[in-house]
Length: 267
Image (cartoon, rainbow, N blue to C red; front, side):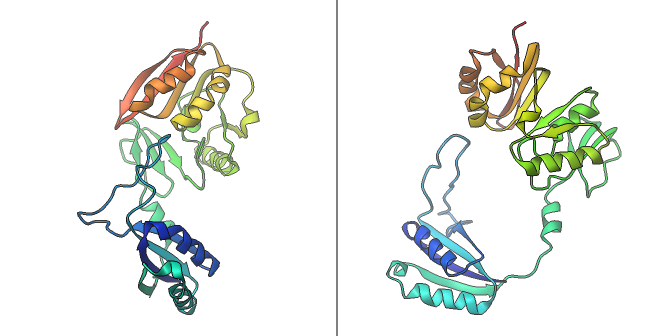
C-alpha cells in the first residue's frame, strides 16, 4: 500500500478529496498541517455542538493507493487542475504492513469499576485482586454495544436483562460477550424491549437521550429507576428539561466532566 500526502488550504480540501476518490484512492483523510507546532489549531466539537471552525487553515490530505504507479498518476493528474494551484505534493511513500488487530488491542487495558470488579479485554489476564471479571471484546459495536452494562447487571444478580440496540453489530457483539461471561442476556433490536422495567439504563449521548425521553420513561415501572449516562456536565439542565414532564432527574455522580443522572418514576 502507498500513501500520497498533499498540503492545501482548507477551501480546497473537499474538492481535492473528491478528486482523489475519483482517481481510485482506497481512502482519504485530512490532518492539521500545523499539528505539534505552536500554530496547531484545536478542531473538535462536543456532542450537540458544532465545531469551532469548518477546518484547519492549512491541511494535509492523505490518500492511500494500491501501488506507487496509481499514486503517482493521481498526483500528476491533480497537478494539472486549476483548483490545485495553491496545493503542493509533500511526498509518496510505501506504508509498512501492520498487525492492525494487535495494534488496536494494545490500546485497551483492564479497567477497574471497583477494587474487586474489573472489565478485562479478552486478550488480557485479569489482575490478581479481581473478584468479579467481565470479559469484553468490543467488536464493531456501539450503543448497547459490547453489552457491558447488560452483562455487568446480570453478573451482579439482575434476574432478567433485556439489551437493545438499533445496530445489528451491537446485538451480535453483546450475544458473544454474554456467552463468554456465562450470563443470560436477552439481546435484540428495540422491539425486544417490551413492557416496563424496575431499572432502565441508557448510555448514549445527550442529543439522542433527549429524543428518547418519552420512550425510555415509558419503559420504567411505577416507582422504578432510570439511569442516564453519556452526558457532559454542561448538558445537565437541558436533559432535566427534556425529561421534566416524565420524571425529575438529578445528578447521581460525576467523573472527568461527565455525569450520571438518576430519576424515579412516580408511584
